[in-house]
Image 1 (cartoon, helix red, strand yellow):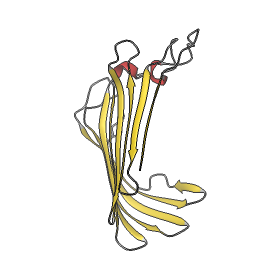
Image 2 (cartoon, one colour):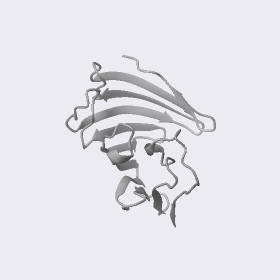
Image 3 (tube, helix red, strand yellow):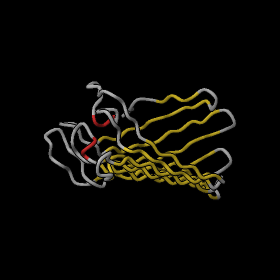
Image 4 (tube, one colour):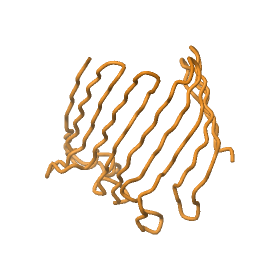
Amino acid sequence: MSISALGGRRWRDMSDPVFDVGSNLDGTASDWVAGLSADFGNPLRIETRVRLDDDSLSLNRIDARINSNIWRVRSRARYYSISGDVTASGFSDEGIELSADLRLTDNYFLLYSLNRDISGRANASGRISDPADIRQTLGVAYEDDCSRFEVFFERSEARDRELGPEDSIKFRFALKTLGDFGSTDVD
């Protein structure tokens, strides 16, 4: 078991106009950043990171995660919230991400994930949309000591100008010691 915490802030003599407010490198002083994590071994890991305004200490960003690995189920949950004060677009963003792998046998897995926008997003015209599922996936995976191969169906509800929801079948192959590569959308 381990618990770790960190916090900090950056100062400099002159601001650099190359950086925007989202980078937290604009101005002469950054916002306060902090992180806390607790790792309870294989069954549970909890991690939270925050960004606090340098003047008012109001919450500009939070990213909280929980990972668990119990019996044959490996699951992950993430909550995030980003204030419009620290984004280039000026719009806030808030959402959750959930994913789970169910081990069917020693080598085969059933996969599911969901990425949900819970605050509504700004589209190209600046209109805020209703909360919606951004992406859902359902698939299967094969894994051995050296590699992992996944095939999954993905439904994306994301909208960008005239482009709307789309369905795709994707694959991903990973060599555990070298990294991974995957397909572009195959409709």
